[in-house]
Image (cartoon, rainbow, N blue to C red; front, side, top):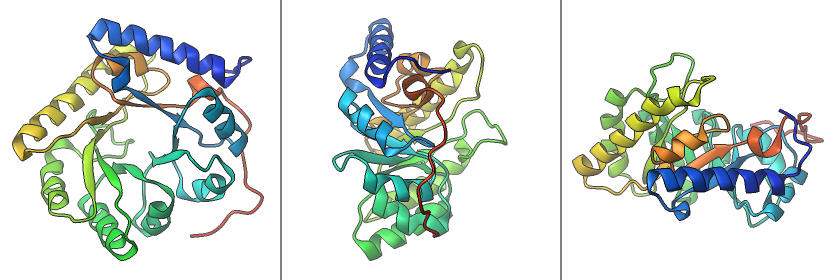
Length: 240
């Protein structure tokens, strides 16, 4: 998908779709925020998106983010939405205020250790592999209670919700059961553990309308906003 239009026009169309989905589901548009997924795009795209009104940005890789974020809009809020290796936790906490992809007890333990050392207080989401796809990251729902009980005892982590990646389907309606199950898991765990989990990170460019109808609060949108563009490469990449 190539965009002849700019980000301003693309974002306006996205907002219109969100408004329609909210009206159908009886939700307020104020409940939903768009995360502009800028992986493979350069700081110029971040600035264009900022000017269009986006305030949240998502990156998949720590190394790419480390090169891009210092050159981008300083007021932007950055979210890590890709898989996080334990050996990248320290630089990740320097770059991101929210980590969507906590998918194991060992990763949660490492984030807590590093956060204690560095004074960071990240907001985290548990990534749940609702669809059970072997190609997707995320923990199975039955593995989550052990991680939840650990996180609830942490001093430095704030658990605010759940994230999932639905299978890619030509018909977005086929993703509805995945999003509904994540919402149901959230509702169950709120009651079971006595916590508030306001964030549901679900929905991407091909299925975000359905995600909104099923309760998403953070939409991770890249292609629908920015199109397919040449991959950005920093002049010099750091090694971690």
